Image 1: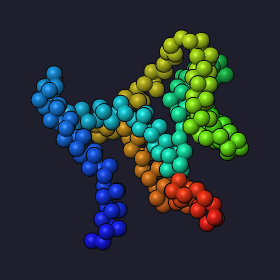
Image 2: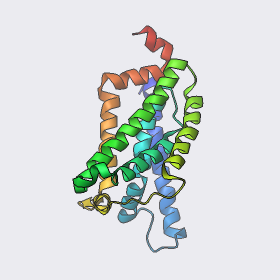
Image 3: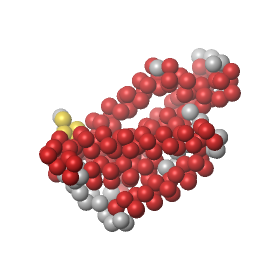
Image 4: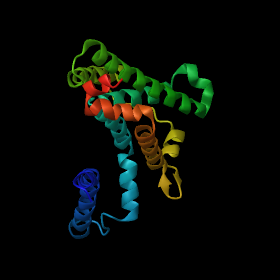
Length: 216
C-alpha cells in the first residue's frame, strides 16, 4: 500500500472510526451507568434516536453540501422554524378549507418553497455583494428568527393536524416515517455529490475556488 493510498484510507475512515468509538463508549456507559434496564445499543433505542435526529440530520445533509462548497450557513435553525410555522399555519388558511387532508401536501410544498426562497436570498446576497457567508447568514439568522416571532405573535404554534401526526408516527417494518425519509434523503445527497457534475463541481470549488474557476 503506497503512502498516498494509506493517507486517503485513513482520511476517509477517520469519521467511521470516530463513530465506532462513540458507539462503544455509549454502549458501555448505557450498560453500566444507565438508570433504565436497557443498554444504549438496544434496537428500539436506536430506532428512537434515528427518529428524533431525523430533522436535524436532514438539515445537516444540506449543510454538508454548503460546507463542501467552502461556505457556511448559520441561519438554518431559524429557517427551519419559519418553514415549520408556515407548514402548520397554512393548513388552517380559509383558502384551503375544502381540501380536507389533502391540505397536507400543499402545506409541505409551501414549507419547501419558503425554505428555498430564504436560501435563495442568502445565496444572492453572498454572490452579489461578496460578503462572507458567515456574516450574511449570521444576520439572516437574526432576521428569520424575528420573522418567526412576528408571524406567530410570540406565541406557541399548535395548529396540529392529527392526520399529519399519524403519518409521522407510522412505520414500515418497524421503522418510522422520519427515519425512512432521512435515509432516502441521505442516499439522494450521496448520489448527487458522487455521481453528478454538480457534486464534482462542489468539491472542486470547496477545495480550491480559484483553481476551479481557472479550470472552467
